[in-house]
Image (cartoon, rainbow, N blue to C red; front, side, top):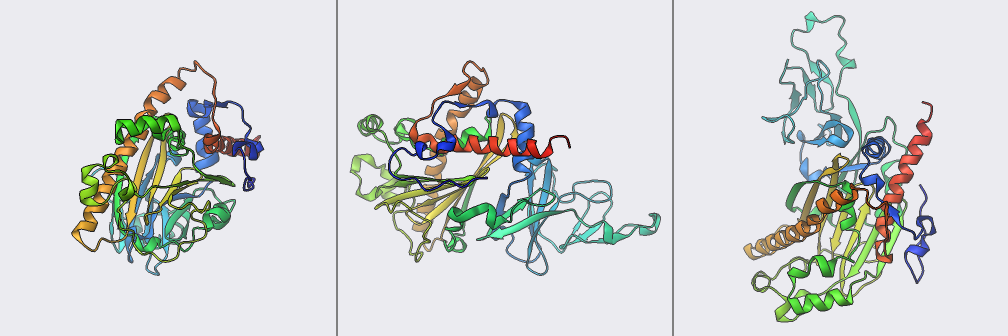
Length: 421
């Protein structure tokens, strides 16, 4: 896929001529047939983030991930040698799901020395080797070395665990990430171990929710109730525009300036924010995390608000200028439903007050996330009416244009490669 140059001054969209400036179709968000091809063309070919190494902190630590979009469940485990590996969560005997607790479709985690099937007690070691077969003599010429767990391509970058479901990935993970994402190397991810997690089932196509976080054109309107009426009205009339957008291969970035919450007028802050010294932008006390990587705050905003890195297809890393970050995942479950996951990461709190400040930031994020999700079902229902065939986008919505164009390019590439096969 092509990499786009950094734009000069002027219209962001016009500096990416491959994207055009005309109306955009949302056929890719309402067509069940397109979704079936998208599953093969995108989610079975791209590198997908499924978690972080802190979820498998020691030998034998594991977690499972349910991935309906590729019709499988996987086990991610830290092996005896300390390597992180992934396997399809299926027993080689009769196809039973290997690792689960009371509810087979729910994800689970834990620590073990081996994996034992609940059905007939076949056992596998942490490297996926079949080590024990109940009544092995009853089988016909069974060679256990041929019946280990089915591996999934798995690589780790900066503590993020990625998997790839292609028989042979078309790119290494580093090549797939490219220069813009690799520019984040050196961020202190390993220090961000205070974690808050949210998960929700959303009745909308996965790309529509990604679109909601790819522009700030909506912010003064959709989030107006979070501010005093007079301020919200003025903000809606003035609008908001981020100072920097960037596209690199399949990935995207929007970077914004920020505000220092404690310097805002008293009437613009909630009393709880003053009490806890925290809010949407995070705790007011910024931790000392050392020198930041060059890839952050490319527009050199002062004050800097946030950078939102959109990793194709469905993973977002959002870094806040106040010294913390969060991730979003959008896991399709059908052409018009998906699972949204939001995870916030902070340094470990040193005092109860620091913990409360983090919790307020997490609750504030959840409120804003609910507001962003609130329009999605209404959007999905009406674009499925097909009353309109396409929709106009402004210059600030260039990243939306790119996501849909990139998805279409991957689908077209897949169709060309599989034509006649």
